[in-house]
Image 1 (cartoon, rainbow over the protein chains, first blue to last red):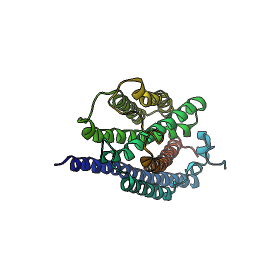
Image 2: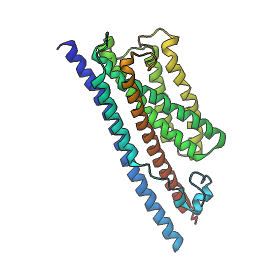
Image 3: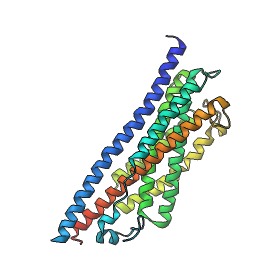
Image 4: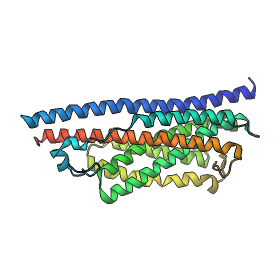
Length: 53
Length: 245
């Protein structure tokens, strides 16, 4: 493999790692955010139910 | 009802838990920041010529250097809000510092990985115990420790106090990382910035830094929103357990 081709592999690896980290963390935030909001709404509903009783 | 951000006492939340609900972080900021990264990377890759010594390997700079800058910026946010928490004991400052710490650790890990990918073809080794690399690894480990401390401490007040202390002291390592290439003889090159670069590469670097800054802002805002939701849920659960109305 020539040096230029080998270097190209490292460049592709660097950009791939960058996108995996950015999209991976974004995915984690979306999932965690969805769970947190659902838990919050469930608890808020439960609390308002307790208050009305 | 008090304006957003002024609900600091738990009695406020017990009376009106829904008032603690944080506003949603706009999904448009996510689209704009991801779009900005695509545009900036495309521009940098297509317009930057091969560098004299490294050839096209230089293109790794457009992701490695902005990732390092975002690490420093995130930990500066941790420092500022940790110090403010220790001063004023506002819960939201603790949550914001913790959100920035998680985002900073993510960028720090990315910086280390990109440095290794760049180091292998440029220096012939994946890793060397050089001052810049070692101090960056120490910074990463401090903030992994910070996140572990928060994960394993149950008492909310204690968690906030301890992590604010670790965050403020840990962020003091940032100037050491930055200056390490000047203070010690290192394999790592001096810091890259638009001022030290060939003008043909500066626009690409600036654009990528701005794009990653938008990503960082979105990540911290979204993580902070989640942290506030989780804390508000905890407060409601505590109130329910105590039979509070």
